[in-house]
Amino acid sequence: MDFKQLKTFVTLAGTLHFGVAAERLRIAQPHVSRRIKQLEEDLQVALFDRNRKNVRLTQAGEAFLPEAVKLLKQADDARRHAMIAAQGKMGKLTIGLIGAALLGPLPRILSEFHTQFPDIVLNFVDNVAPSEALLRTLDEGVTDAVFIHPPARAQGDYGRMIIVKEPLVAVLPTNHRLAARSTLDLVELADDPWVMFPRDQNDKGVYDRIISLCHRAGFSPKITQEASNTLSRLGLVAAGFGVHLVHSTWDTMPFPGVVYVPVTPSDTVIVSCYWRKTDRNPLLRSFVDIVKQYRPRRD
Image (cartoon, rainbow, N blue to C red; front, side, top):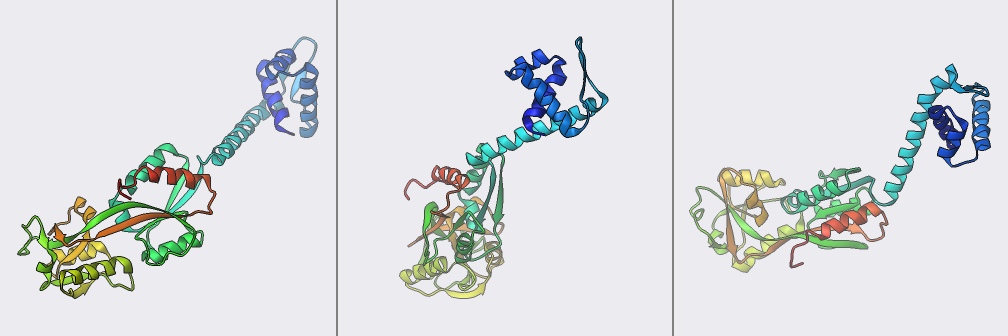
C-alpha cells in the first residue's frame, strides 16, 4: 500500500467513475484500475463493487475511506512540516538569559519572533548563573543562544551582538537624604552602607565595574549586605540596609521604597546575545536576524 494507491482510492470513492477519477488524477484510466486492484490485493478485501453500469463502495470500502483520508492528511502535514522546518519556520530553540536581559528589548524580540514563526517552540534557561555558566550551556549545546553580560574571558567561536548598553544609576531608599536629587556625585555615597551581590556567585565583570567606578570616584564602598538576586537587593535598599547601583533600565520597573538617581561618574552595563558561529540551524539564523533589528544605535 502506498500513497498513490490511497489517493486513487479516495478520488474514485468521491467520483464513483473510473474515467472521471482518471481525469482528476491526470493519469490514464488503466492506471486507476491497476492501483485499485493492487490496493485491494494488499488489504485482501474488495473496496468496490463494479460492473459495466456503475461503481459503488463495498462495506469494507466505506469503512476504509475515512482512514485513507486521515492517512493522506497526515502525509500532507508531515510533508508540509518537513518543508517548513527546512526553511527555518518550524522546530525548537532554547534561549538562555539573565534577568537583566528582560528589561531591555528581549521581550519585544521574542514577541516579534513568535509572530513571524508561530510554529517554533521556544524553551528558556533562566536558572543558571552567572553569565559565564550560561555561556557554557551554549558550548555544551544545551542552548542555541544566550543573553548575558559579556564575560571577562569568552573563549570560543561566538557571534555576538549588544542589545542593552545602559549607564549605571544609584538605587536609594525613598527616605534617603539624596533621594530627591535629579543627579548626584557618586562620592556623596562614600559614607553609606552598600548592598552588593557575591562576586563569586554572580557576574564578576559587573561587580568589578561597580567597584572600579567607586574607586574612580575616590572611595571604596562599605559593603554590609549581599544578595544574589537583584529584586532581593532592591528590597534590602528599600528596607534601609544600604545603597546600590543597577543599570538604568531598572527604572522602567518601579519597585516600592526605592528611587533611581543618575550618578557621576558612571559606567555602562552591557547585555549581549551570543550564539555559536558554527551553528547552521536555519531557526537560529532567523532568530539572530530579528535580534539585529533591536541593536542599540551605537553598538
